[in-house]
Length: 197
Image 1: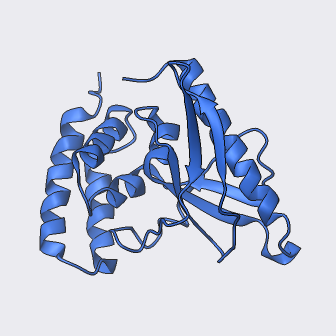
Image 2: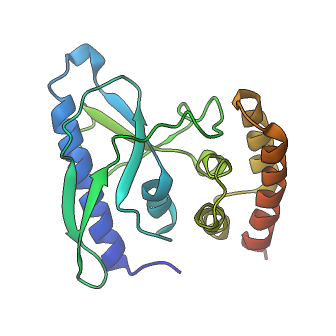
């Protein structure tokens, strides 16, 4: 179920403010290193695509190794008027789970007001890559995220399967278990994707 437009707008405003702070910090880098691409995954990317859930942290990796301030957080109010904080998870990295080798190259540019793109270029993992990133842990939340992407029509079974199987080549770990997880995810996508009329 999608949140109200007001609640989604408040979240995106907080995300824009957080990205603006990151962009301001990056603005101190030499011009030849800018813009830094920021590849957003996890719940923040899910919210941007579907509005299905609110994540209070932003998971991201960057095109350059950068040093950022530790206190990157923005206050905002949720749909119930409750004060919340959106913060950058500085411990996140995308090397522990499955991810297609072209995931960063194929990431979708995120345009939000107030973000100076000459410093920071935020991008969302493309829907298929975002779903693939959920396969390693494959918790109930991860399954729900895949279903939400499918309900929005952002995943197609055949395209997802080919991309996910291709991602297996770069994964270190039990690929047999992951192959089984891909099959389960494909069934979830098939069950949730909108029916063509």
